[in-house]
Image 1 (spheres, rainbow, N blue to C red):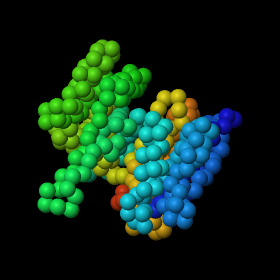
Image 2: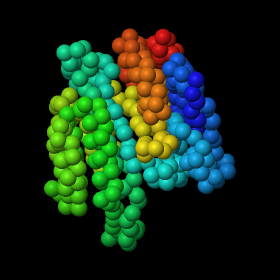
Image 3: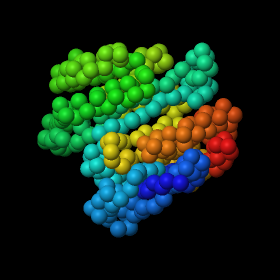
Image 4: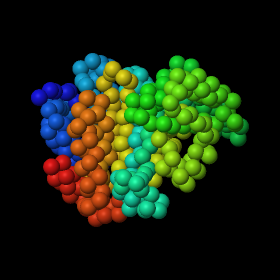
Length: 355
């Protein structure tokens, strides 16, 4: 039995609920494949911030950087902190300070009835046809918060937001997308920008062509982000790997979540090869649902699958995905997926489906 050190930041809203429901399932899948998770629960949250004024102290950051193998985050965001200071310092702070430049977001339809699209999109082998991943650049773009304000509160007010695209930042996310595609036998990588309207995004096209030439077995194609949004709805099954900017990746991955059933089944990983990753379900803290026992734990379990894969426990990761697929087919499901089950009902069913 090997061991991995996992830091848990349950966070706000439904975060603690989905962590409490999903973590035993993740631990069971890992343990069945010879991996024991040494879990450490950390207090960083809106509650902690309101009580102490701390967001993420330097010593806590150093601990997460140096002493753990992965970080599992429930959700951040609380109406009692309208400026989201704690969420910005914890989530974006970890992304930027740990240089987790890959935001990896899989989009897989686990059962046709979960999609708002027609239900007969299936491959010849019987598996669902919507199955692509998005490589979102995670440390640049407009999310750096660069810009300025002019004449605030006057009729001439102007807000300027700067978008940063460095050669290093763009090249490494494109390389990551091609490497992932090559390792898994994928045949197409799609890059998306809006360079026809934003000339400074043309660096994406130049580097996409330059790097793509190193992978002659992989077709490369370019789509402007508005056209890609349309095509993802009209023909999602043709896409395999998408690589794009921080902002567009954020938007397109939520669109992708809508194609497969919603944010309650959407997982993500923030990665830098060779470093501890930060793993978070996409759904956010959903304060109106907190305490009602209706939050969907599937996204947390699928996020755990990404975590186990990065920890080298690929068989445990696959077991979690199969469990979600089985429960998606048979139920129970939470209300976001059209069912009437509780968080606990779904968690129990996922645990039973591991067997």
